Image (cartoon, rainbow, N blue to C red; front, side, top):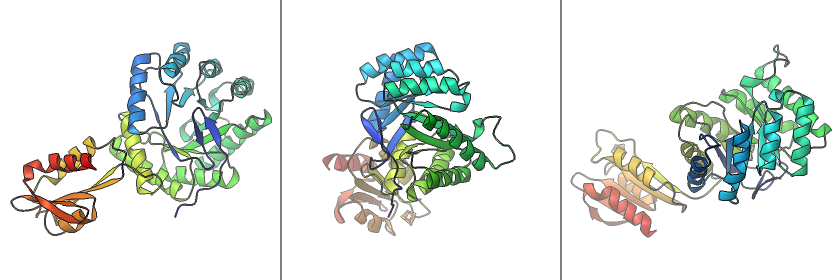
Length: 349
Ligand code: SF4
């Protein structure tokens, strides 16, 4: 059983992060934020997929200003503005209605500029994520130390700066593209601080590699009770990030809901198109919220056993396929209709 470490609870627009709040899923738009319609459309797609918090780049004045229109079209969606280098964009984003901002205090230019951001964030009651990435540690950090030690001491210096301004509305991320470094730095950080943590493996790579790295890194940390919000970073459609994140939470037993497609790996005994059916099925049932287990099995060896344990399942036979529901054989169906029949049965449920 996972026992979550206790963290402070912060409010991010319409949701909470940390404390006893559910672990939330984040993603980031890859549209130009100034392109309001494309950004709104992408955010809608992300929310339909199950994303809880969306981040957008606020890299120009127009982008920071566009947050106002995006928010007015998408009432209630927690929106985070991602800022680098220019403190004025952080201030403008907050004034445009961003529910939270993410900054790397090390690239904002000076402590005074960070303080100006904190003043406005404080006035608008907007939380700030202190985003630390192993690849962008300040030049001044001690290079004789390990990456993890450097990340921790940089985190401490930023937190001290925020606390000196009595600003505690903080969330922290400490991302590395190295899975083991990421696990270690979050573990060590959470032994010292109780600020809510945003988990992720940065620059994790393409859909497959990134999903694996994120599942290991985020999965291990969540299993240890660390983490309040997660982002799976993929060089892919952001909706894929949400799909992977949902599966991480589901398979750790943290979040219920969604169709779980169980399918056999296929072998020389396989009697039907298990791979084709499983992939297509998974694609078509993505947005179903109900907890349903569907089995697609290739033969009579393990097939009926697995299919029986699922809510709905098929086992391909030599000439046709057997359809199961709740452990009982419903009927024989032709191999060609397996996908359609499974979709119909899921629809009925
Ligand atoms: Fe092979 Fe049958 Fe097992 Fe699938 S269920 S891998 S077809 S033995």
